[in-house]
Image (cartoon, rainbow, N blue to C red; front, top):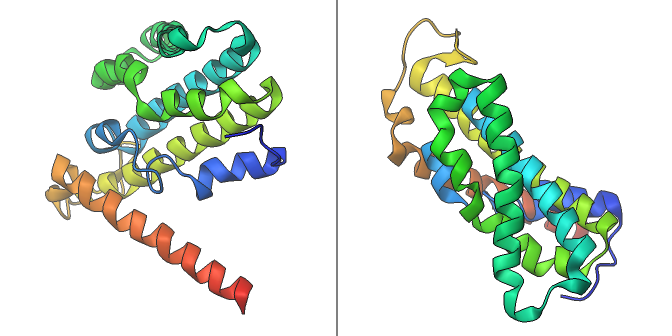
Length: 205
């Protein structure tokens, strides 16, 4: 794609709504299904991905003119791995209990398709400023998706939110199982598509 003509707010909201990594692009489904059993897990992994996405995008945008086309993918991977190492050490040091529950998924951020895809399709063709806003939008979109899934699955599966008992009982334990993650993602994808169709009809009307 050529250098973007979108404004910073457009880039930001594109990642949150228009091209939401989970609900619109269906990328990085493994963590969306495996980790989003609680709001806290979704929040922490979402923040980790947000950090890695923003800093990786800015790094690649800054050095894009010095990357040989034949080694661009290894360069992306090395850049992502560097920032994943940073966030991995920070989480292990400051939130060790939560880190124990999702440690392997933090390390797997290196292989998350959404980050590599944005580096290849956007950061390597645009300025640092535009890449920052695109990375921020994509990261916030992923964070929003993970927390939305965590909210539904924790509340309906365990009757709690952020570990606090809300309902006083466990309504449907099904929602904490991996298969429920696919169910919730599919339902929310349908909601996003319906909202988009409704907005487009309103614009045409």
